[in-house]
Structures are given as C-alpha cells and as structure tokens.
Amino acid sequence: MLKGKRVLLGVTGSIAAYKSAYLIRLLQQEGAEVKALITDAGKHFIGIDTLRALTGHEVYTDNFLTDGAWRDSHISLAEWADVYLLAPATANTIAGLACGMAGNLVTSTALAFSSHRIAVAPAMNTAMWCSPAVVDNVSLLRRRGVTIIDPGEGSLACGAQGTGRLAEPEDILAALTAILVTNKPLSGVRIMITAGPTREWLDDVRYISNPSTGKIGFSLTRAALAQGAEVRLVMGPVNELLDDIIAGAELISVESALDMQREVSAGIDTTDVLIMAAAVSDYRPVVRASGKIKKDKDVMTLNLVRNPDILKDIAGRAVNCVLIGFALESANHLENAQRKLADKRLDMIILNDPTSFGAETGSFTLLMKNRGPICIDQASKDNLALSIMEKIADILKERKRTDENN
Ligand code: CTP
Image 1 (cartoon, rainbow, N blue to C red):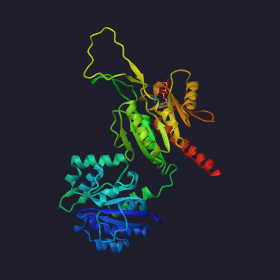
Image 2 (image 1 turned 45 degrees about the vertical axis):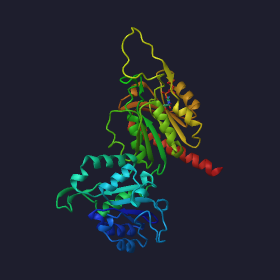
Image 3 (image 1 turned 90 degrees about the vertical axis):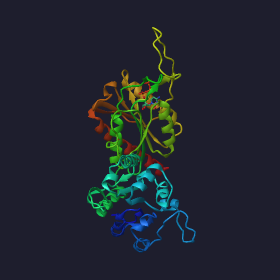
Image 4 (image 1 turned 135 degrees about the vertical axis):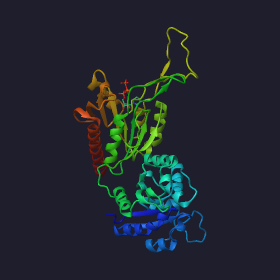
C-alpha cells in the first residue's frame, strides 16, 4: 500500500520507543522507505545502531553535528518525506509542537512540514495524557490539521492500567495509510472557508452582529475534509464547541470583518478554493468608544463606516483561485445573486434567504458562470455542502483540462 512513500520517523523519550523497530519493519513491508530522527531522551530507550540498521540510513540526532556525516537538514528531510510520524511522542514533544519550539531536531523538523503531513502517536502515563496542558496541546494540534493517533488502553510501563500506551504499530500503519493513500476527489486541494458572523464593537460591552451560527461552515469543512481537501477555516464568533466537528482542519478564530479580511488575505496565496460562507457585517462603528456608552440622550445616532468587501477585494489578487460566495437575499433573489456572481467575479454563488440562519435545512440555488441555476430544495446543510464539493471538483477538473489544452 505504501510503495514509493517516504516516512520520516521521529522517536522521542518514551519506553515505547522499543516498538519503533517493529514499526519500521511494518512500514517497509508495505513498501515505504523510512528515515529516523531521535531526541537525546529517545536514545535512552532504543539504540541508534538499531534504527540505522533497520532503516539503512543515517539516524539524525541533533541540529549541530559537525563530524561531516551530516547530509540532511531539517528542511531537506521535510522535502524528502511524504509524512512525518512522531512515534512515540512524549508530552514534552507534543508541547514543543504546539508551541512551535525548535529546541531539538525532532521539533524543529516539524516546523518545516505542513500540519497535514504530520502524524503524532502519543505515549505517556494516563494522568499525563489527561492533564489539562496535554489535552489543550493535543486539541490545538488536531485543530491545525495534525493527525493524532490516539493512545490505547492497557498496562502502562509505570505499572498502572489506563489510557496512554502507544497505539499498536498496525493502527499507526493504518493511520499513515489513510494520510498517504487517497484517491479522493479533492485530495491535496487547499480550501479556505470563512463562516459565522463578524462582530463590530460599539463600545467595550456592545457590538453589532447577526444570528449566523456557522453551521454551513461546519458542514462545508466536514465535506471538504471527507473528500481529501486541506481546510483552513476562518471562523467568526460562534457558540458551538468545534473540536470534534472540524478535527483535521486548521481553525483560525476571528471577531471583526477587518480581522477576517486580514486572515483571508494571509492565506490566499496558498489557497486553491475560497468559500466565503461568513455573514460579514457590512458596516462597523466609525470609532469604538472606550468603556460603556451612557444613555444620556433620548435619540442616539450611530456613525458607521463601510467594511471592505472581502470577497470582491480578494478576487483581483486570487486569479488562479476558485472563488465561491453566498448571497443572502430577501427580495429579487435571483437577480441580486446573479449580479453578485458577476460583480465579485465568482465561479459560483449559493443563493439563500434569511430563514436559513441557524436552521438545519434550507432551500438553496447554486449559480455558476455560463450554466443554468441548480435548485436544492429543503436540503440539510450537510447535503448542500456535498453538492458544493462536487461542483468544486468539476470546476477544478475543467480548469485542468483548459490548462492542458492551452
Ligand atoms: N462578503 C464579503 N465581505 C463583506 C460582505 C460580504 O466578503 N463585507 C461576502 C459574503 O461572505 C458572501 C458574499 O460576499 O459570500 C455576499 O454577501 P451578502 O451579504 O449576500 O451580500 P453583500 O455583498 O454584503 O451585499 P448586500 O448586503 O448589499 O446584499
């Protein structure tokens, strides 16, 4: 299954490091080539000679080798590998990954990989695995798109019973196979999704916003991940707990339209498809008053200034990106949506109406350039998201064909 795939294995200081030897064999039996890195702590638990003999490659141990044997750097190792597997990964290494530490070769190498090419198989005592710091760090890594291969339950090296033992090598192999072998329609496609409302503060205790719940954004994220895409989700303030829903996506939380514009702009050069599902506030207060505005007038006038149109502004810069918007209309639905499709230079716009705010289902119309409208009546947001992903795959295929013919 892994023929031609290259796995970089980072071994860290856990007793479970002895299982790395079997893991290397298993990966090789599936056709993968393996190179290994090890931390100083890891060396207490498995010999470098064992790893060198099994992998057939030099085993790298720190950033500062001076004996001339150094042929690869953390950057070239990241270029060489298809996936970076940290197994076993200690609480210390997981904290290092979460904070972006570059204190040793194993963590600095992780910085040279995109999160979607990193898999982490933790191993530690149950109390450590359940400690708030480790729970938060693991959750942060999941949100960034790192694959966490959950530890198993059973007897631990310390004599206790519980969760924390390194996942079985066969389970680690299965998780790596899922990362490396994908024939999904959107494999490797980088999709940025914006969702939820934005919040524009009037003073320190009040804001202008709207009732968007971000549900369409969650459905789009789930559908995109299921089809193999890499997802960056830029999310306005919502109430739902996101972790389980969008595990595997990179989550960026924002508040205002300007925050959202900054994050969309920062990510656009590495995005193939932008879906603006966010209900962006069109206006913000000219100034945010400090403290709390007092009710000392009978009539109060708010001075608002127009927010940038994030989607329209990015269209000029993102010429190779597939651009998708939503049109929320309460009158002249089709006409307004068609105008937005053209005006914002979009590949597709999804027309909906205010009743879809917070609802589980809705009626939607997909409008695309040079094609008739597609009506999706009373569909769940998950079904809408699947239809959108199908259309995205079609648009990308069509673009590829056009590029090949030119
Ligand atoms: N949008 C945006 N930036 C804004 C407003 C909207 O990027 N400041 C995006 C939305 O995310 C959506 C599309 O533009 O994908 C259309 O948003 P919509 O609210 O329907 O329309 P507007 O362009 O804001 O126009 P109007 O409010 O006049 O209908």
